[in-house]
View 1 (cartoon, one colour):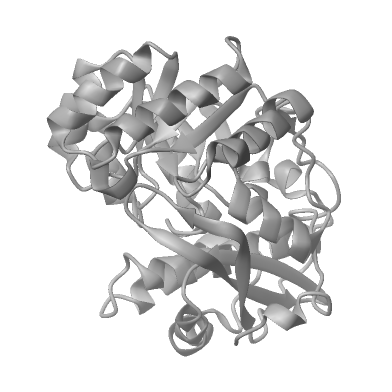
View 2: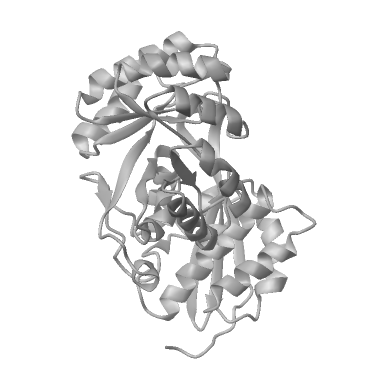
Length: 365
């Protein structure tokens, strides 16, 4: 093992990338996505981490996190994580501070693996060789032709046997169109592929139950955020009323959040770019396993692939259209989901290299 090496001052940047088409889900619309990237150097190696958050998160890293991690031993990632968590006490951990910690923590794990000249999956210890993925997009702004083309590409082009579309349009005020789009999706993907939906909290409790029972007729097996993820009692009521799995957790920023949510869902979703990085993601996965639940990695697939391979209770990771597009643009070493799985064993660390010059046009910080 290498001797202790001190963390140098992180370099933090932010980039805003236009969407390839207008996008919306049940409760939000957007036409750009911003990614904040942290690069941390020690011992001649550099680790890279990122979060999908406002550009102002870069300043939060500089002002509140950099002072407490500089000079620390780069191999002691949990110690750095604890120092960052304590540093944001007065700022508040959920939200922007959680995203900032996440980007730095992911970079620190990438850095540690690079210092030890190992793929991150080998450093953490693999539980599986292949990580299942599901295609995710199907935005409510897509017309049927666009939706069909995207689903066709995943299921019949890349042979990904599970896909998810957005429903709950206009805060649940377009339920008939939601069902029509689900019907279209099933026709496109055929009877064998798994079909998931995500309402992003757009429905009321009983509306979610009514819609969910209709969706069951089209073989929908995964209903994400049928009601707000803050409505834990509502999630539990919908889960108990439907045959499909009810899932949530994408907006979890710390371990107590996941502990509160576990009794209300069938599968716990955890996002390493929000919850506190890979350190907290592993803790959330262990918490879920202790309660007999699987975990699914939310968005940012290249940040999750290695850590997802290291837990026995993984269901899959989300191959989210926006983030796949950005990560393929920004990094050399992007993974290939053909066949419905990725194999995160290539290279050292996360196996990615930032294309700094090529993405400069998108830089805003």
